[in-house]
Length: 372
Length: 129
Image 1: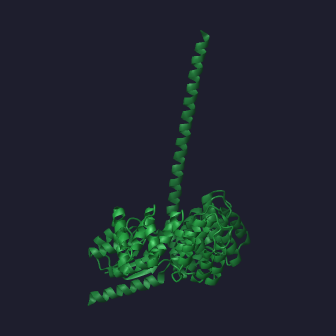
Image 2: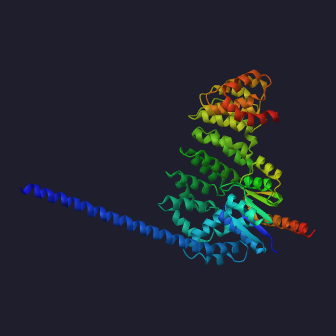
């Protein structure tokens, strides 16, 4: 008779234990949430106060009403420093001329330097990224900072690798900038957007177009760099106005592309040459039969190139692409065929076959036909 | 009476600085941080000049200009566009819509102030004649 009673008591004890643990957990979580909320509200209040005091001082400084030293006295705590840098950073990006130069000079104040140097060694991603943003706005000459940023280029978080590279591209030393660019491009998991950003920043920091062109071309020909990084670089060349690279690029395009992402590079070449308008790449397209590529983006770029540089000899290829399994390829090719006098029969057949798509093609393609 | 300028810009710090510079000139400045509110303010306040960012949440600068032109709210030559990007077709389209100027960011604040002064002077001359 004793055993069931003991068993019941044990069960009740366990239930009570669980209830107490759950209750304690509830109290802890509630307290944590409350404290966190209060803390966030407090930080926000401090940041708002800092915004109200610091922002007018930044304006006074830009307008030449106070000196750097006078401004420095208003940076009383970390909220002031964070707020001041946040605003200065945005303003440097949006302004040019004297105002921009004055703001950059302001970032040399020891309080900023000390604060962000400490953040550069932080273990928190956001803090490191912010510190990199600070050094990106300055002309870094300090060897210890450069070494630290070079180390951060290999950080497992993409955002840190990217921010550290942006900062390093801000140095005066071209060799150092080239090394920073290469290190970044060798990272395997950068997005194409960050690659374009870095290339743009690298280009704008170079003293001459020639210097930029040589260094960028070197990256394109480097077989260690992943193809998915080379592709956005090629696409950007016309945007940067590096037309001098058109001929060497064409020579490269003619050769077989030996890269794991050769299809991406091929598509980028065709897209890039669409803007290097004087070069006729049709012989290479023919040789590589890009319209038969298993990758729809290669076929799409081929169709786009043929649409923009239409010649009657493209008709057969365009008719084939107008029946492509990919809708976008079909639309571009059908729109391209609107420029053809010979392909009238094919067009009426296509119009019937892809009746839905023709609504849009007639709107956009009609304009193309009109233009030609 | 001081001239009324509407600044439509979502970038806080640059908007505040432009506002500060214009207010120093004794101008009355209204600030909105998106295209929808901006358009509403153009309708209700009929500002003498609009300085507007191109890329904004809600509706962009081009849509605002198109609506202003379509509904004839104010003359579109009282609009200055600021833009981070310079897309040729877009610039052409905006000039065709009659905008006064198109300035590319980063902007030179002195140049912007000179342009604003010039437009306001022209407006004053128009008012007097």
